[in-house]
Image (cartoon, rainbow, N blue to C red):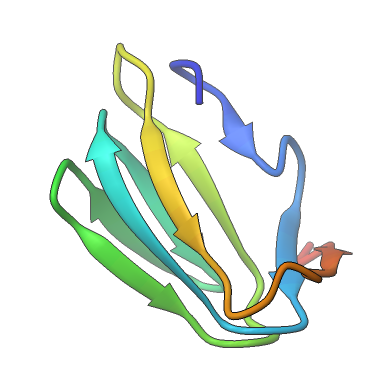
Length: 82
């Protein structure tokens, strides 16, 4: 992810299955509904199925994540929390 970018670009997303991610490089935050967590190299995190979330690159370099899902058939569901 480029510096200053977010995934998704607007709003939040949830999936029809659980997700695990590992930060390879860069810095950012993950917002899970109303909570925020810092991301830095070596941090792993888990998002339960159906939890609205987004990742924001707050650093000045690429944020590189390894995403792991239990299936190749992942459904991205946009969420508006406003």
